[in-house]
Image 1 (cartoon, rainbow, N blue to C red):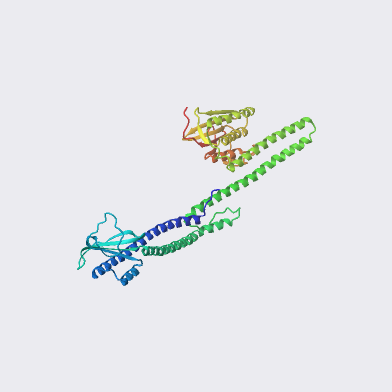
Image 2: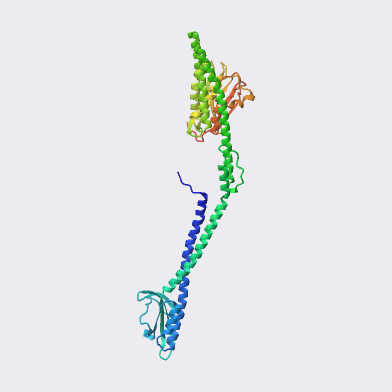
Length: 463
């Protein structure tokens, strides 16, 4: 079974995951900003210290910085400080003898400081150097002052700034997540109320849901109410059908039992044979009734209508059904004729059920009319619709009964035998296929025309 996450979980994930992604991107930007800020601060400080060194060296005519000055500078910088002063022709003047070399191609311009990263005795350092033109007693010409320090303090400042920003960002994300959680929880409260209302219902309560819900859920509630209505209608139809079926079966069973009792008490062989023949006839009628009841139940349970669809020729299918009734028509001294165009008329439907519906129309026309009745079966097409109809010139049906006979267990005449299920089954089959069935007086003025109208396939085979 496919796992489906709760709406609350989905909403939280959809809101918090992008927020977390933004937080990660923001944290990276914060780190680079912190590093840039630390570099700018320490570079400015290092530059100021370098100028301090230059002034002290010039003031002392090239002597080393005093210990007090070095300690003060190191304390302010936070890392050990180094310097190197070279006179004209790059002659060493004072400071530390070695200094981190510049990258090849870096040219110093007079009075313009140059920063670069270097390495001093295996330790990464930040370096600033500048060329200055001086005219002192011991120093006259261009001198180069270089100052550098390790980058430990600026790293510490970077991480401290990044940590503080990250803490603020984390608190912001956590607060936003908490707000989102409460917002989702409160926003979904109407759905929980709807869920509770549905759960409290009994299995027999199919009344519409009238609880106030947000506009986003109104269409769902309307669909549920429509479904409840359909289920209730289906239950009503089945309960009525079961009650009618029980009533219809009670009389044949009682009659069959009575005939069996009479046959058991028969005095002569001929009398017993006559009673047994009556039992066989009653059994055939009951078998037909039971089969029709089962077919009707199958249709109402939606097991046969929309499933097993196939494209078939309605002309050929109807011709085969009519052929099976020829012997019955001959026994009853009735005429049965099939007429149709030569071209196939294709429809997509459940072939078995459509043939059963046509069969019921033909059987109804033969069973409810006297001898000498002429029955015509025909298939035609017009405006994209395929029509199979059965027309007779028999006794007909009164206009008041034309609609009633399509209901289960209703016959057009009190004197007519039969279960009253044939036309009802045909109607249900046709409606389940999106078609319609109609009973109209025969154009000849006598009898009835029963029509089954289905949607014709758009692509017909060529002849």
